[in-house]
Image (tube, rainbow, N blue to C red; front, side):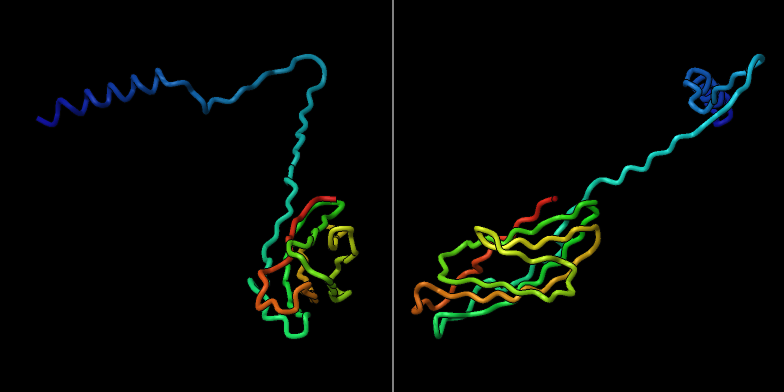
Amino acid sequence: MNTPKRPLFAALLASAMLLAPATGIGESAMVTQGKSSASLDFRIIIPPIMRVLENSHPRQLDAFSDGETSAQQRLVVVSNMKRGFCVSLRRAADLSTWEVQTAPQSGLELSPAADGYHLCGTRPGRYTVVLEHRFGARNSNANALHWPVQTDISAI
């Protein structure tokens, strides 16, 4: 009983293959006059990337004993932007003073701005930087303060 089904299946399969478009057939042409040449033009487009891989800092700052406290922030940024990028550090809380320092060998330039600081890299690469923040509170009786710095990244 299996024997009649096999030829029918084979005939259906052959018919389906004849009706299906032949995507594997290539094109060719024969040039009888003039010269023929072929060239390939490959373009590899790499999309611009700026990514903050790490932005670690304490969620909350300890009590202000003398009205001042300090904390470290670690940033790891990867960018393939030709002209680089800038990280904007802005005040997100009411502070009397705020200072930021970083090691000069980080490859990033730290500069003060009207609303905080700018941390800029002028070439593509992976940057790891530890920022040392010093804060002064307006209210010296404050027990704790949520992380008072907002971090944004932008292309140059």
